[in-house]
Length: 256
Image (cartoon, rainbow, N blue to C red; front, side, top):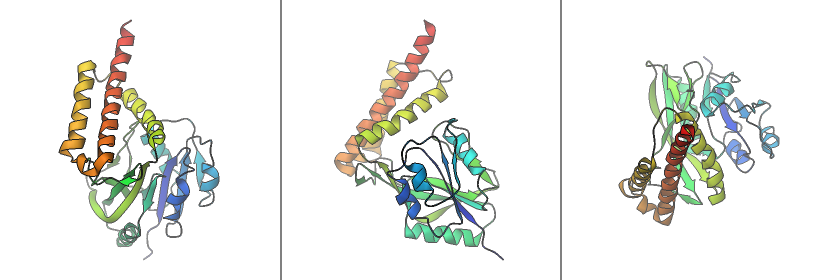
């Protein structure tokens, strides 16, 4: 009985700073690597082609969920492991992934626990850890939903989810400039998805922003992450305020 095959899949754009380090952690033990680019202008493609010839481009950005669906159409393996370019597979996680593929249990998908690094510091609280994300499944049993942002894997009711050992390292923000560039797109996509469906106002924005800070810094014990915990809570508070105010201003503009 042959061991099932495994593909690592990524959707990327301008990930030259991270892509090589990511792919080096899966090189040599997966059957194929599939990368769908959305129009990089840096050396992302050149780096990717050092690891795979399955590099595709779709510059007509449909949102994160649908872009992942398009990438999955290029996968030929039995299983898919989804990664982001700023993630790294640890040796312990690699071993458990290989065991899961070898066991080949029916109707099982797997989630992994991410350990995130922000501005050069590992974040162990602030609501960031544990951070279980469903990333490994049979390609004929699941796929991502249509969400523009914060997309999720959709499985049938017959599929149960198990946890893998080992951590998936996540180097989320290199510096403040990286944070601003990265979150700007997420905030716009969040508002685009809710425009016309969700009401917001100044009081709503303030309440949600304050709630975000209290949750991250106090309830989720962000203070135990030191100054980085405070910085992350404050940045998240600002981002929360911005997205609700954007929603409010869009609705106000339609009234004129």
